[in-house]
Image 1 (cartoon, rainbow, N blue to C red):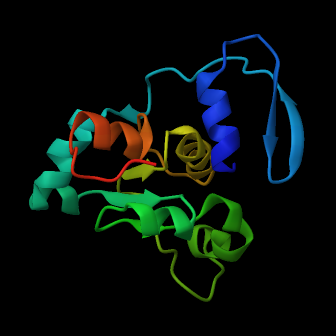
Image 2 (cartoon, rainbow, N blue to C red; image 1 turned 90 degrees about the vertical axis):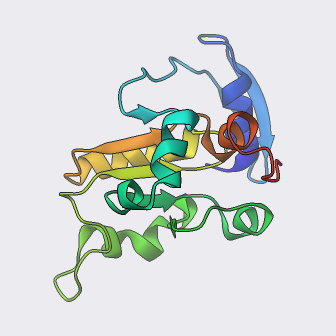
Length: 155
């Protein structure tokens, strides 16, 4: 999902169709529901994990934003798996028989994007791949920067 689409969905009203323009053209979208709070971690809860080196080691951290977004602001320790480059990295997550997967299905994963929509998509994908403890950073790095670490650049 491209950032402009993600932002438009976040501002949407449930069950009210709207149009949004992205680099791929115009889209008519209707948000049917916003996800429940299950499978999320708040920016404040994430800060506790992120700031404690021992606790942080227990988690696998994945950022699904684009490389250009990472140049604007990023957090150390995250593996970058840009959602739109799925075909490039999917074998690294799913395993291809020749190489061990880059993520361990038995360890919890925290996924982050800009606002939490793309990371929710990644969380659903990881769940389908057999990951049982997957958490979406609620509101993404933007919420983390707003609520926890104001020194981070917002975009």
